[in-house]
Image (cartoon, rainbow, N blue to C red; front, side, top):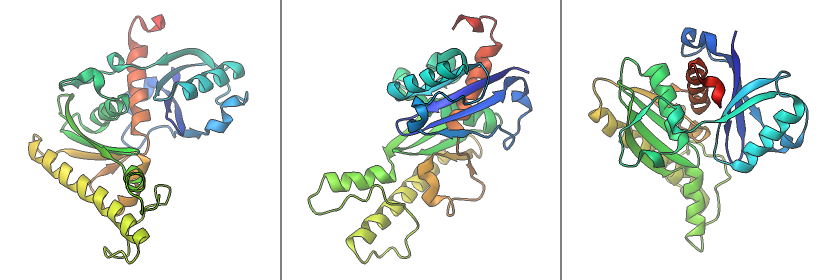
Amino acid sequence: MMRIATADIGNSSIKYLVGDISRIHERGENEWPESQNLTLESLSQKAPLIGQPMDWFVSSVNEENAAGLRERLQAAGDLTRWHCLDRQDVSLTLDVDQPERVGMDRVLAAFAAHRIFGLQQDVIVVDCGTALTIDLVGQDGVFRGGVIMTGPATNLSALNLMTEALPDLSTEKLVRPASVLGRSTREAMLSGAWYNGLGAIREVVQEMQNLSQGEPRIVGTGGGLGPWRDVLPQDWVLVDDLVLRGIFLAAADLQRKPNHGAF
């Protein structure tokens, strides 16, 4: 057994997963270890997360939160080695003009979607959070690019920031509107955000399907995708922790390399 720990460190949350890399090729689409959520408020605690020293592989968009997690792991004795992934650690070819500018979340989500769902077909990755990104990865493991748009909360926040009269509804839960005809400013804004996101997803995915070889697999992820889960096609695969799975897969590849002890 060769167990490792992986973490996806964001600005407002941290997800982590502990698993055995020796079983990575045995895992089906629905047989992954369960991921865990860690609150930022708990980073100052010294209680163990997993109760044993372990190699940690992480991807982070927030240096302060990453430092807080590392300090907690060290204080609790849960850390042997720490490795923050970069693009060179991920076995994905980026066929874009500036590969060094592609965000690690997009890289890792695309990598995981290809390895888990796309070895026999192209895959389209829909990831919705603060931003809504939709990317196409070929069956050959080549990231071909995609689109970056604002997520629903960002859209609603922008309406407030860029106007004098519209309220800030960015923290409200977005649900399917009872009618497209909003009967108040609030209803109209929430309805607009819901239809704006759904329409963008449908249109972009259709365009990417037209560019794909054969019938692509569609994989959705990200907490912001929630408002549309019930109306998306049933053959789409929805994975809550796709980026975290990408970290785990990349870490497993690194651990198998002869010089993996160098980091």
